[in-house]
Length: 355
Image 1 (spheres, rainbow, N blue to C red):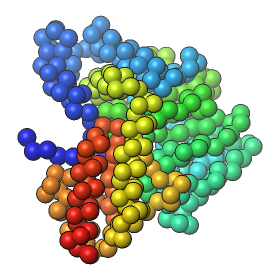
Image 2 (tube, rainbow, N blue to C red; image 1 turned 90 degrees about the vertical axis):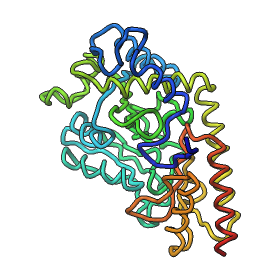
Image 3 (cartoon, rainbow, N blue to C red; image 1 turned 135 degrees about the vertical axis):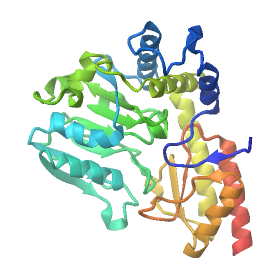
Image 4 (cartoon, helix red, strand yellow; image 1 turned 90 degrees about the horizontal axis):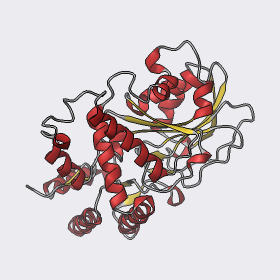
């Protein structure tokens, strides 16, 4: 099989070891003669999968006992509306506006109450993380920890006191150590760093679950997922199974400390190549550069050629988001160092040939 390095922002690269194990178990899971996709979500075999996934998530992230770990569907996009539907109740929430995903979260929250934009980096095309000015009467403060389109990442989360801090961590969860106890809620679509599309991880402090609005339809209430252990209806069984395998892989590779060290190494290699070049220019400000999504520009007339020649070499997924153009290399946990080095070799060669 041709060697291909996957730099797509999402659905994104998965660890090779995870996919090989899933392939081996696809037709016969756990020796039962059936696929994980065929068995009942009420069976002891699947209950073991979902319970183990939750336990490993708690261990790896250091989730305190007073938090619930839940599996939902609909991606982060559903959380943009489900969160304020449950918690805002016509009151005010602070939102840090850092780019496209924050913008979508803000638009949904406005349907359920007042949104105060506590910081906004639109003035520089969302190339930096603005200061977050917290309102004393906010119900919660919402941030997007990593913006995949602009290539910026929050390296120091705002202090919010007694006001719950809520973070969309879809594109950088499990990439570094964070103190979960500083957050009232963390949510993440799986398809960027921890699994395939179809499952959304929600980690929520139990007192916030208790405060969720009554009178919601069953599947839009966080209380449903906590009280029924994410098994009220048929959950996304296969994506949860893959997420469990990713947790196994993270454990076997040293956990979050090892991942963070590796992610910094990969990012340094790529950013150093960009900064030492006359052709490539980083899109994000230095202090807020993402370790997950490296965005850069080169002369516009060369961008399509760059992407085409890269693809021919098995370096795929490098076009920037359609809304901003340019180029983007997503180097999530599963991207090996060799993939980043191969990209840098191509970039250097391309620059010499096109200068």
